[in-house]
Each structure stands twice: as C-alpha cells, then as structure tokens.
Amino acid sequence: MTSRRRLLQASAAVAAGAGGVALVGAAALHSDCPERQEVPAHLRGAAPLPYAQLISLDLVSQSAHADILRIAYRAITSIDKGDIAAWLALGEGAFPARVGRPRHLKKMPLFAGDILDPAQSHGDLLLHITGSTARAVQHAAERTLRTLPQQHVRWRMNGIRPENRIEGGRGLAQNPFHFTEGYGNPAADEEVTERAIVKAGHGEPSWAVGGSYQVIRIIQLATGFWDRDTVHEQERIIGRRREGRWLDGTPSDERPVFASDPHGKITPLDAHVRRAAPDRRNPPPMIRRSYNYHRNPDEQGLIFCCFQRDLEKGFEAVQHRLEGEAMAKYTLTIGGGYFFVPPPGDAWLRALTGG
Ligand code: HEM
Picture 1 (cartoon, rainbow, N blue to C red):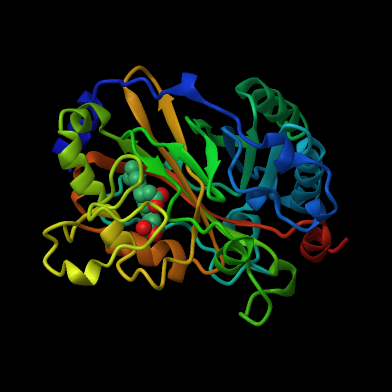
Picture 2: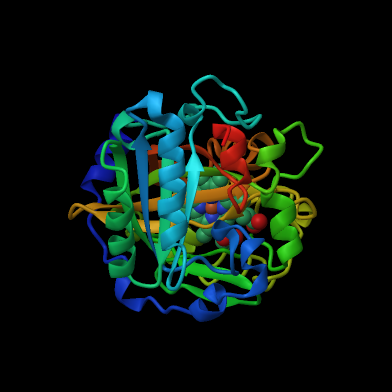
C-alpha cells in the first residue's frame, strides 16, 4: 500500500486534455421542454455537462435542519437552468433521527485498498453543480454557498470531462488514462431509468420513489506510471481498446463473448471490464457519469460518480468484483461518499421536514 501511495505521489502530471472539451447538445439537454419537470437533473440528457463542482457540506446546525434543507433546495433549484444542471444529494447525516432514511443509505464503507481521507469523504449534503463552462459552474457554486453561510464545507472538487460528446445515444468522455469512458452505459432512456431510479414496491419510503443513490469515489490515478506502459499493456488492463473496441475486435457498442475466451487469452480475466461486467447479458445496474480532476501539479484522478436504484446490486457488487483487478496498482481511492438524490419537485422536502 505504501509503495502504491508513493507511486501515485511520484506520478508525473500529464495534461488532462482540458483544452479539448467539446460541448455537444447542451442546448438540447437544457431546453425548457415539458418533461423537464419529470427527469431528474442528474440524469437529464444523454451526456453530463463538461464541467462540474461538487461541494460536500456538514450541517453544523442540526437544530435548524429543516430550514437548511429548504434553503439548500431553493438555492439549487434557482441555479438549475440555462447552462447549469444542478442537484442536491443527501448523506446519511441528513437524517439525524434515521426517520425516513432511504433503505440503503449509510456511510460509505472502506473497500479493499481504500485510504479514505476524512477531509475528502462523506458529508451531510452534496451540492452537485454541472455546467457548460467552468466559469458558469464557479459562479453558480458561489451563489449557492452565499445562501448557506453557516454550513461547513467539508470538501470541494472541480471536475472536467474532456472530449465530452454523445455517440449512439451514449455520453462519452476521455479519462486521465486516455481511454474513452461511457460505453457500458445504456443508450435508451428506459434502461437508464431501470438502472438508476428508485421505484415503488422496493421497501423505500414513498418520498424517495423517483430518486437515486449516488456514489462518489475520489480516485487518484498514477498517470505517470501508467503512461510508461505500452498502449497494448494498457488495453489488456482495461479490456477494451482506447477508443472502445473490444480486444477480440467486437465493435464498441456490441457485446463480446467472454465465454469463448475462458482462460483470458484475449481479454485477461483480471481486466477492468471483464471484472466489472462478466455477464454481458446482465450488465451492472448502474449509470456512470464520472469527471476527471487535476489538482496540485502532480495529482490527477477520477471523480467517479454513479447512480443506481439499489446500492448493493449496483456499485457495491461491482466494486467487490474489481478487487484484485490488474488496474488496482494504478489507483488509490482517497475520498467520496454515499448520497441520495431526491426525486424532482419538493414533495420529498415536505415529507422530510413536515412542511
Ligand atoms: C479507477 C478508475 C477507473 C477507470 C480509469 C475506469 C475506466 C473504465 C473504462 C475505460 C471502461 C470501458 C468503457 C466504458 O464502458 O465506459 C470502464 C467500464 C466500466 N467501469 Fe470503470 N473505471 C474506473 C473505476 C470504476 C469503478 C470504481 C467502477 C465501479 C465500482 C467501475 C465500473 C465500470 C463498469 C460497470 C464498466 C462497464 C463495463 C461494461 O459494461 O462493459 N469503474 N471503466
């Protein structure tokens, strides 16, 4: 572990490709269409907007809890328009008496290899602000924070999606390892809903129906170390070509047949995608919408972000399967948390605050 940390620290900075951001379809994603009220901000449109800021808050004043939730909700909905898509997500600390807490919501546990920094983990309230420019995001974040002056900012991260685009209905971007991400997400809206949105009849409080569990993992990536490997080696670690094609030549948007390669001669058994989604007919029930981050001269990584209706079947099942994957020695998870994004509208707020 120590050597992994050293390796990550020693990792040389590589430009995140921030200059190459292309905003595709922002207007379409954010027009005031009638369904706007129905689709939660975090899943609106096929691709996330290219810039993000995540602000995790500790609710200092527990006595004024209900008021703070109302103020935060008003602030976030007032910026969620035009070139900004923003939402609020609740940590387990937002439910001091556990009353009404979503069934799976808990403090994010430690997974194998994690070294969680408390100053970059968890939080009672997450403000997730995305936008078409870094400036618009920063402005919206400052405006929101001014309305919550008494609350303690626990951690705050800026993210970016280089080469953000939509192809075949999927939002794609380039991660700091130079690989295209997003193919594993579904192109069809119904499948997005099926994987990410809580529905009635699953033992969740009724206010939570229409919401999603959101997982954030702040993952340092040893980009310098990674860049010393050949592209061929990197592709065997991920299990796809950089541009998305499968290692057996299957096109990026089709399914490979892992069963015809039982010993991992073509796609190694410890490759990321093979561990993440071994059964091609039953893809992991989660939607990934991550951002790259680059801070300090030599720290790059992924603000891994995923949404699901069931934390155990979604993120946790995949995370456990990834233990021991070939990519593990290039990554170190240092923060993040578990949150719940309430459904659109304010019925949830009335249910939780009694008015
Ligand atoms: C450590 C940083 C990570 C990197 C650099 C990374 C990279 C990638 C890449 C390049 C792909 C293939 C393209 C795609 O389908 O999007 C992929 C797929 C995937 N990753 Fe990751 N990933 C990371 C972390 C994670 C984590 C923490 C999880 C969940 C616990 C995860 C779950 C998945 C899933 C479910 C797929 C889709 C598999 C499929 O359907 O083929 N990844 N990842």
